[in-house]
Amino acid sequence: MAQWEGKSKGTVLGYKIFVFFIKKAGVRTAYFILFFVATYYFLFLRRSNRAIFYYFRQRLGYSWFKAKICVFKSYFTFGQTIIDKVSISAGMRDSFTYEFDGVETLKRLLAEKKGGVLISAHMGNFEIAEHFFGEIDLDFQINLVTTDLEHSAIKNYLESITQKSSIKFIIIKEDLSHIFDINAALARNELVCFTGDRYFEGVKSLSGNLLGETAKFPAGPFLIASRLKVPVVFVYVMKEPKLHYHLYAREAQVKHRDEQALLGEYIGSVEQMVQKYPLQWFNYFDFWDRIENQHRN
Image (cartoon, rainbow, N blue to C red; front, side, top):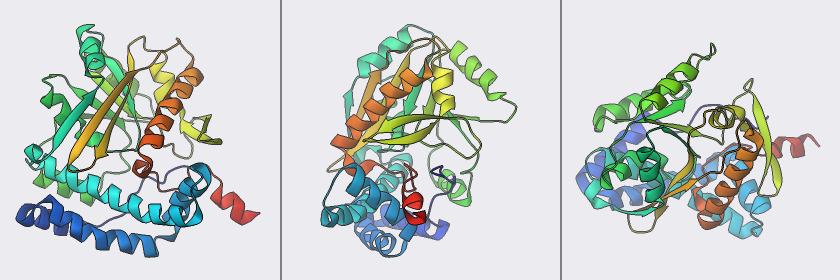
């Protein structure tokens, strides 16, 4: 199955090493250390290597050699986004520059005072979005809808060394009580954010064609967003060269109770980001459910 297992690689010790170099020698020195970490991942993480190689080779159509090189570059870029997130959260926001594309959409959404739904993906560095919003003087509350599967020692450590995030979390529960939390947040003119690109075994899914191949997506974000009668915006925060970030916000055209159409729009927006930032697709698992099938055949 192509569901994500809810676990990310890395250790607390590894993060502590990077934090040390960030604080003592700066972000770019941490990038230098990252080269060796990315090399280790490239050489030894066979399962995630196969998954991301499939993405570059089969879904983007790269040559075998280019796809191999991009596997390493992908790990390196992913590591950079983690370093950037820690740096910005630790008070080094002024070391970075920011660019805004679609900020008027967010301002209009807030002016309507109905709340709104943001849908993002595991691309770029969405977790620094709150710092963008502060930069453009948008004062509102973000509620991130998530599972509790990634509550880990790493997360606890990062929270202990960085500035407290203003983002609130709505944990998905089996009794569906999170639906009440979502509605309450919207009633307060707050934003509710989902990621739409990872589903778990046993969770209802929708199918769609991404980059020429059928994949499964979690149904929840699209079912909820298509029924709430509030604006829905696709939001991505993408890394650019030289400590620069670019925020994209695009409002979706939502047909009431048509979650499949909303998924289609979402997939189109993800594909646009992938074509522009191919190295920032950070789903290191068998997303299209093709690799294991090929091995079985």
